[in-house]
Structures are given as structure tokens and as C-alpha cells.
Length: 105
Length: 197
Image 1 (spheres, each protein chain N blue to C red):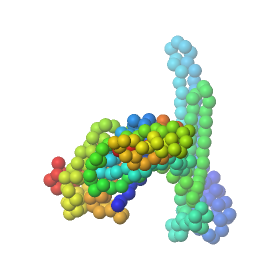
Image 2 (image 1 turned 90 degrees about the horizontal axis):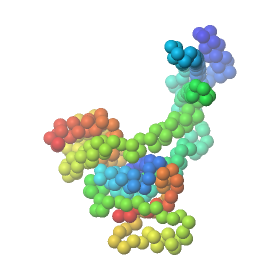
Image 3 (image 1 turned 90 degrees about the vertical axis):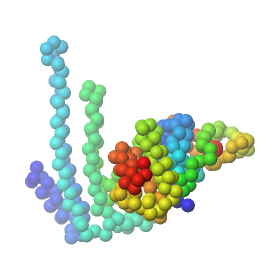
């Protein structure tokens, strides 16, 4: 299962990040995880994808910010949404601010 | 100038002894001349002059860079010299210059790389490029996993398979990384050369 790692802009808003991930998935990859970190002292977003052998995503990915000040149970409750699956949950720089972000499909 | 450079190199050789060392010298001359206008016929003028010379002696038979975790075992023969000028004319002028060798040089380059990497993020791609990438992905899907054709496309584009990936998977990554029109055109022509449009 070949994996690709690609950076995402840290100054993008959630809609732009969603659009970028959807574009990469349309090229034949599937989102596995998201993470914020630092590279060479600079803030960065990193998305990990797996090669889907070209298949298009069944449903488009949708990123949503979750309030990080909520308790663990409350955050978990936000990730359970009828009719869609949470692909991954992590931290991303959204408009240069770290946010807890869930990726739903 | 030539005499000064010779002095720097000779002094470095004395300090370094017989072991192979990197020697780097850099010099920058900068001049700014600002002339106020007279408010009538003579406009204000700013003239910027910039002259730069760099020289490096690098041993070609070094062992290369070697690190054990965060510990440097053998330094690399990497060098980098940078000069930065920022002037807002009346508000102030800022000058920075640095020289790095070995791992310091590599670190500086890595930081610049990371910055450029972030700038190249997808959000900055024009819509036409995004559309063309998705069209190429459709062309690749039309191969239906045909490795022989994918190998031919790679070859016609002058590309090598990526490590650990077959030809189809490699093409998919090349499409993902194609952010310049030249790269996209090359891939489009390579598909066309095997009859896929």
C-alpha cells in the first residue's frame, strides 16, 4: 500500500483545506491522517494518503473544526455522526491557528 | 581584492593543516545613493549598486556527511553564503549576511526548502492547473492498471519509476507533483504518444 505525504498550506481556511484534500483524492489517493507540526522551525500541515489504485472516493471528504476545549467524551460525541464516517481526527493549522479538525466522509 | 582573497585562503590553510577542509570566502559591496528632488523639475532619485564575489575550495574526496542520530560524525563539504538587504529608503535599512558550511549549510537549505514547500501548497495552484491534473488522473485511470503502457508513458516523459512503486503508481505521484505547466504538458504529450488523449 504505497503512501504519499503532502504538505497543506497553514494559512488556508477549512474550506480551502477541504478543497485541497478533495483534489488529491481525485488524483487517486485516499486520506488516512492529518497532522500539524514543525519542519525546519516552520509550522506545517501534513496529510497522509494511500494509493487507491486510481479509484475515486466514494464520498468527498469534509473537514470540520471541533472545539478543543471540550472534554474527551464531548469531542468523541462530535465525531459520531449518523450517515458519515470519521476518517481521522487531528490538529491542523487553519488560517495559521491550530485547530482540532475531524475529516468526515 | 585578489590579494585579500589570497590572504584569506593562506590563513585558512595555516589553520587547517593538512586535513581536507572547506574554504569559503565571500565579499559584497553595496552602495545606495539617494538624491532628493527640488520639487519642481528634478525628480527624487535612488541609485542602488551591488557587487558580489564568492569563492570556495571544496575537497572532492571527502567522506561525505554522516550523522549518528543528532551527533555529527563526519561533516559534509556543503557550503552556503547568503546576503539579505531590505531597505525602505527613509524608514531604515536592514542587512544580513551569513556563511554556513557542513551541516549548518544543509540545515539552512532545508529551512528554505520547507518554506518554499509550504508556498507551493495546493491552495496557490491556478484552477487551470488543478483541472489539468485531474484530467491526467483520468487518463491514468483509463490505463486500467496496464503496467506496460504506464512504463511506456513514463519513458516517453523521461521519468523513472519511483522507488518502491510500479509504473502506474509512479505516474500517479508524478501527476500529484506536477504543479508547473511544463510538467503537465510533458505528461500530456507522453500519454498522447501511446494514443491516450
